[in-house]
Image 1 (cartoon, helix red, strand yellow):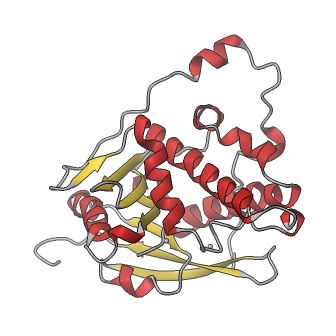
Image 2 (cartoon, helix red, strand yellow):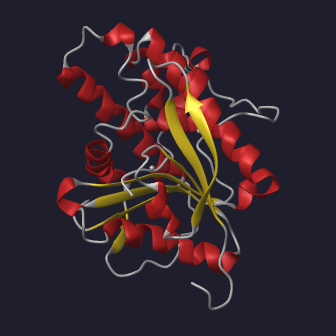
Image 3 (spheres, helix red, strand yellow):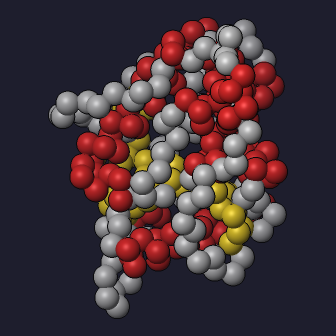
Length: 268
């Protein structure tokens, strides 16, 4: 889900995500599984890097996540599992720390299984899932630390994140792209820090991948959680194909599903 330049009425049979909170249990994990947690990131094809764009490493996940946390500080969709009725007794600092923690886990998972890019001193960060990749497996949940959310999120937060949010994103992408799902690029998150705005940083990160998608004839998919962003994404060739809502908050949280079709020939 992308924002800062970031799910719909469901009419098809949902394909449930394989991950949920009840299935995540680290008690008595066998030693051979624990050894696997030290595996190196999966190697994925990286489009040629333009000047100023670089790949984020595992040693830099906290800095990348900090940029995203700042960019999504007031985003209702990203804060959806944090700002819950059963956490009203928490201080704003406690909520902020959990917000950052979630994005650290998500960022690390994308470094392991996807592609994380940045511009400058983490002035903008993009989390991508290249064609044929996903982080929907237990090993990645362990390696990235996302399993801890089963204990860090409140009861309502877990319902929102594991039962509603993740399955919705999973089902909408598959339902929207169909047979092209596995051949698509997925812009999961893109955010710009306050100091990095107005410099075209996010544009560089988007064009880095869309140029490769054009060469490969691949669609690019994202969810936008900010009503100001669809017009910006349209400049890059994205179009809104449907709208989806998260229903468990006091008011519905709207997300726009957007797809960019590959541009062929000289047309830009």
